[in-house]
Every structure is written in C-alpha cells, then in structure tokens.
Image 1: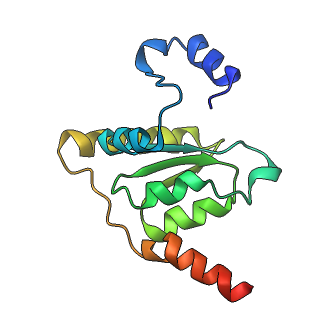
Image 2 (image 1 turned 45 degrees about the vertical axis):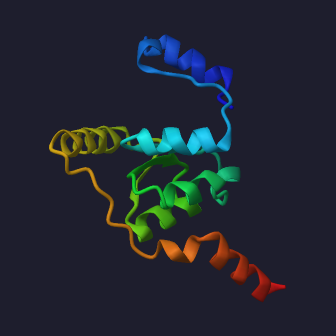
Length: 138
C-alpha cells in the first residue's frame, strides 16, 4: 500500500497526472504490469531500522529483466544485491543529482531501444537456492 504522505507529496509536486495508481491488484496482474514497465522502482524507508530489510519485491524484480531503480537508506543490505547482480542502480536519499542523472540515462537508453539488463548471479537469489541455504542453517 502507498501511504497518504506519498500521495500528498505527489499532489504537492503536481505529479498526479503522471501517476497511475492501480490500487490493490492480484499478484498475477502485478507481474503483468511489471513486465510492461521499462524501469522498476524500489523504495525503502530512510531509517536505521530499515537498513537490514530486504524487500520481497526485490526478488521478483531481479528476474524481471528490467532495470531496478532503488532508493533507500545509505548502506542498505539490498543495495549490495542490486549492485552485485548488475540489475540496476541504488541511491541513498541524499543522492538526488545522481538519481536524476540515472533517470535521464535510462530514458535515453529507452529512446534508443537499448535499455537492457545484463544480470549476473541472480540464480543465487531464487526461491530454490534461498530455501536450500535456509535448510543448511537449520
């Protein structure tokens, strides 16, 4: 769910015409919408408490074949996964100019039909492999 604070920020910046909020949709429909997207946005709350959180959505994004544009707390655990798998870019909240440059880069790649992901090592994060690693710990 998207918080009221986010919707208010969208309104404050006069971006409501740029946003399509589908509300709750089934997982199947969510994956279909994901496949239509050119870039996938992943945002985590900017706090010390969320640095070690790895959003479940990240694992679906990894196999999507779409670049991930992630924003979160500096030194987030999920930043390392995105960087190591070459599946996108991660930015801390204070890196606004770098984020803007990456959005422009992705847009230009899209215009030139060259927006691709060359993912590496994502099999390590499959449900099968993660479950296997968990069984080793038990």
